[in-house]
Length: 157
Image (cartoon, rainbow, N blue to C red; front, side, top):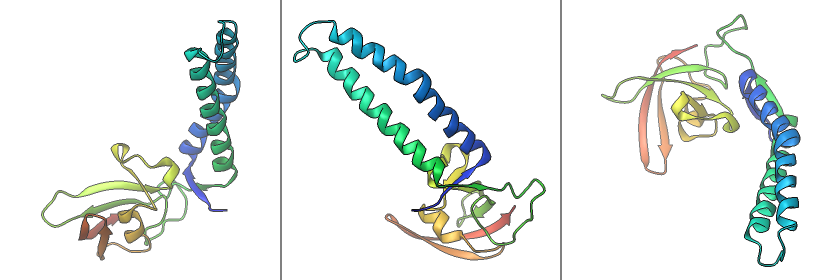
C-alpha cells in the first residue's frame, strides 16, 4: 500500500472533510432520497436519480479519505524546529529558476495535498520527482510530456 505524504494542516483538513461527510452530508443525501421516494414513480424521478448518484459519490469519497488517512505519513515542517536537511525531500520549501524566467518557490507535498495555486507541488509531479534528493546549486533535468528543461536549485528550506 503506497504511503500518502501529508502536512499536519493537510491531514487535519482531510479529517474535517471526512467528519463532515459522515455526519452532515450523509444525512442531507438520505433526506433527499427520502423526499424523492415520496415523489412518486422512482423510474422516472430525476431527483431520485440525482440523489442516488450523490450518495454514491459521498460514500466513495468517504472510502477514499479513510484509505488516504490510514496510509498517511505526516510531513515534518523543516522550518520549525525539526532537523533541517540539505537535500530536497517531501516537506521541503524550494526555490528554483528555469533559464531567464523569474525564480519560483514552492513546497513539495504528497499528491493528495498538491495545489500549484497555493505553491504546493506533488512529489509525484515531473518537477517534484526530478528535484527530490538534489541540493542547492544543482542543475536538474525535468522531463515532462511537453518536453525537457533544466532548473537550477537556488534555495532549500
